[in-house]
Amino acid sequence: MKDLTEKLYYQNGHLARFTARVLSCARDEKGWAVKLDRTAFFPGGGGQEADEGELSGLNLLGLREEGEDVVHLVPEPLEPGALVEGKLNWPLRFARMQGHSGEHILSGTVHRLFGCDNVGFHMGAEDITIDFNAELSHEDLARAELETNRAVWRNVPVRTLLPSPGELAEMEYRSKKELSGEVRIVEIEGVDRCACCAPHVGNTGEVGVVKIIDSMRHRGGTRLSILCGEAALADYEALHRNNAAVSAALSAKRLETGAAIARIMSEQEERKAELTRLKREILQLKSAALRPTDGSICIFEEDIDMVTLRELVNAGSELAGVLCAGFAGRDGDYKYIIGSRTRQLRALAKEINAAISGRGGGSDAMLQGSCKAARAEIEAYFSALKQPHQTTRMEVKS
Image (cartoon, rainbow, N blue to C red; front, side, top):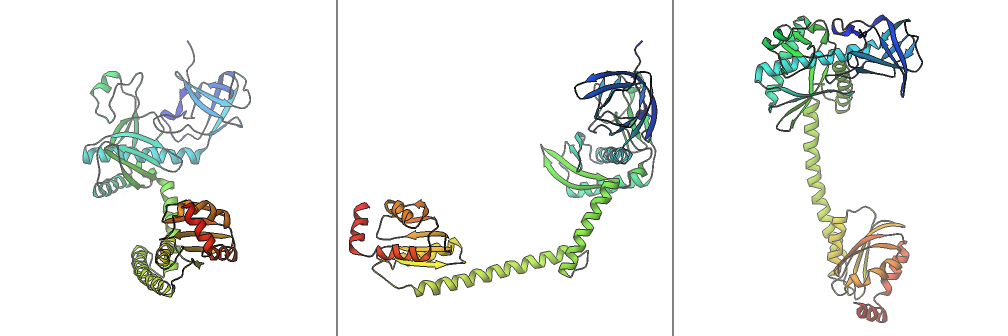
């Protein structure tokens, strides 16, 4: 009978080192595929990534399941029959156990409180996402989070069960569906019971804390992002540092930074309104300073927004016999708006852009674009447009 890999992680998720005998070693496209008589390395599944670590000093390149065996991929061959030592990346394994057990506690709590099911779960590098098949309000989530953490603090046992097919048929558990082969049940006393193949903590207290960091509507239900244990603490530390920096910058108490920011934003809105009023006054003054001419009017402003420039050009177009050209920026890097009440500008666009090293276009009444010419070149060109022969030529083009 073929030897099968004994899965040590099924009964003892805290086993960080172990010894095993090599059953086989074969060349693989990713390295050498090694099967052991037993292993504590979890190959991944149920939303949890595979373990990382070393096998007799060789870094694991990957893990996979082949039937009832676990295949360990390593960069060098190991002798069949040899006794080898496995060493898990324990901080990573424990963090994942904290996260996975925390997810079970939260999912069981949400199911008990609101009758909805976990229909999607993924443990990512940044956080854990859970999809529930019902919309949950902020109040619902706050209640579920508190009840979840109370279950953590009660430090109740987390057990694994391997029920017979008959026992399984009679058992109540989450995610009850058709499963083939031996079904492993993870039971958290008084909190949750669910089919799961992954390693878990031994008691809920090891989870430390469960924190919901984000929620959104998703496919008619709710998607949560959560952190557990050390990851939740690290997140809190980052938030605390950021809040402390904001607190110091605003001279606000650490629990009053939100109110301080709201006050500043309100003041900014008031200043924006005042700035808009002042810009309007400046525009009126600049417009009033424009004088009628038979030729063209050129306006140059270093610091002006395009909306204000357009209004200035519109005012100037009423006074110019040929056109009004407005330029925002500095020599060699202008944005322009050109308007006219007497000329069809679309027909002149090519000539104007050639003269001022520009690019742009628009309608018969207005052109918009950018140019690289210096102010002196621009003024010389538009000044010449008021001359009779230039005006006649433009009228023919239009």
